[in-house]
Image (cartoon, rainbow, N blue to C red; front, side, top):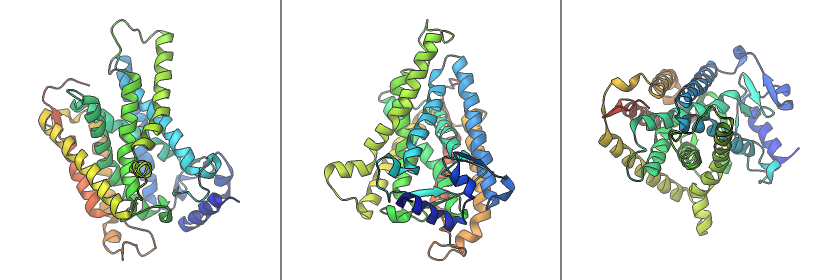
Length: 366
């Protein structure tokens, strides 16, 4: 048994152990009534619904000629597969045999020998896509340097909604981090995850999609009913998904410090995270404030309805978790799980509400 497999078994035992058939097969299904905590059923339904709802929205926009939406949705799935599989099996792909960073608990549907729950595969096209659609709707891709500022906005908006989820999951065993492989963490969440996946990942995906899909709407005279046009679109979208991990790795602070030959200490990691997220927050809020206004009129759109449902669900979950979170000793609950940062999650909820209540001054219906 490899060191990665041994680490997986050790972490799985901390979560309560996995069914042998789950670890032995590419796909495994178990009764949703037998999950280790009822909150796991809630997040499964929420994220799988979001991914499918997002697909329906993207297809509807595609039929009207707006290809960027479906392009982003499909590219997010390609990115997910290209990123998640190496993370689950680092030793099989030439990585360090000890570099297993986390494992997911056993959910209703598992893939890749128990490593990937279906709801995690739905996470990318659910939250990343709805964040992208929200920024598109707000018009943040328009104007000078629109592609770059829009991509940063997608990263910041995704970070805000994702961290409400990210700081909740470990408390009820949705997944378990291998903290020995991280420089530092905020409560239960490694700082590198908060920056790299929750912020840099959506930026990389947005830049790759905007670069290769080329436009929000197909050029006049190009028929989407033609097989050649659809094949060209498909090739571009898959290429965008495969290019995203390259952008992702290139943009992460770990890569910058490694390239400069500087050790990434916990203090430097925190300072870098504050600088990146703080700058993105100021830029995005400023642009939102300039080109949008407070309005309830834009709430009846896919991105806002879904993200409002997302926030409402997690607000209820956080209220349920509040006693356990507040009674945790040194950040550890009475049954040994690590609690997330309640202040950070609350701050993200407030920012999420801000984004949802902003509507572009002249509604364009995108």
